Image (cartoon, rainbow, N blue to C red; front, side, top):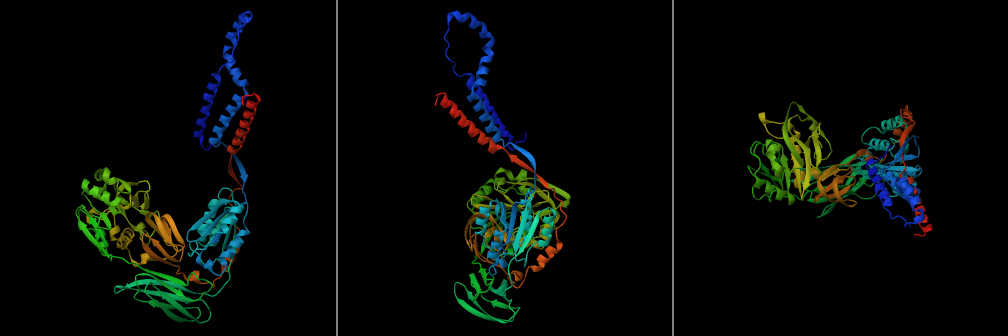
Length: 623
């Protein structure tokens, strides 16, 4: 008999005390009549065993209570039967493009209106942005209409193919229909036509619905901030998508002043905008007036109000590529010491990079206080951090548990488990690792990079109010080298990113992002988005144009995408290609195996038996 949770059948043991209770129940009082005593004693020996059993079987209350206990145990064990059911067409997955171009005129509202016509008995709703976001899964028609009324467009480039793949997973068992509503002017990832063809090959009905019409627009499509002679300058590109020449007036505002610029841009052309001596803080550049797409009419620039950050490197060797990389960072002071000093509170980040020497107990105690108080510590792999040298106290401070040193002649390769700004533009797949610590991650630890066998190589976690990072790529040199990471040009870039992430510093590009960027936070915290405050966030998706406040840093986020801003594009070409492809051969079966759970019916029977028991008790006059 199939059960979802067979351990719940232990509840059947409850029938044993029920039987014992009835067997020990007081018997009716018997009056001995002398003239019959002889006959009764003859029958007493024969019926002594059968009397109690017969009384149990004949008592309806016992039978009802026994059946109630059995049914409750079976319901808790989730008893089910398997049947072959035909694929259902009643589940509809509605995918709505939430990219920046959908903010043009009424495109998004038209898409929501169109989606209402496809609502069926069971519905799932997905917003297609840089990553697909499931807004409703297997909801009713009322839930679908309510969800549709709450949707808002984003400011990223939509990955329609990924959204279709998500819809395919939702329909993988029962089948159904996928409806994609978009302007189909631009996308990330695979071609949506290929995604449609793949979904159809699995027997799914896929409809592509086009919304939107061509219109005029003027927008800021590119921007870059550079440091020149100790000051920052901004070079932006403004494009006129109209056929006629346009006089574009721009307002440039920061905390100190507001100025205006005018650009005379020919039709279907671009023109640069240069702003020098940018003030620290947020500068806003906006196109005066309104047009069909407002999301690209404003650009935000963030110039950090940074002070020099202090990084302490503790190592038993002076030749450290990591220290060299850190010393090249602007606004970062680096100090190298052989041991952990008694007071490390002045340092923003501490890097433990001992190769052979194990830390003393007083050094570990100092690190523990520093971390729990909010400090940031990076532990770099080496013989000193191996399982036999690290010791229990030091192991407790790291995000991983280290073991023995593993060596391999052929080397192992690395893979990125989570794409974040720490791994962006770093070619970890080109790193050859010949020696590493056999480590396992602790609970609540996030691993960004590991070996292909799953050994953590870049992990982080939190202890108290602090952040700890494990860097499994030892930076020993020459014949002692464990890997070749320090020889790659990306090595100093990685340390720029890591030190900036931990210490609140970084390059100017860390403060000025494009929509669709994702960053991992060292610990859950509240962030401020252009739309409001989000609580307990571990991972930030920058999907709106505006200013985010993350870890006390103001981050400017802009669209900067020519095709998303091009409101003259039409999606007819993709629709024509999709129709030309036609339906492909269906390789999917016509039925699926469904589990039909019977617990609901069992609970209904239990309620009916309880009512019957109450009626019997009342009829006996015991109630």
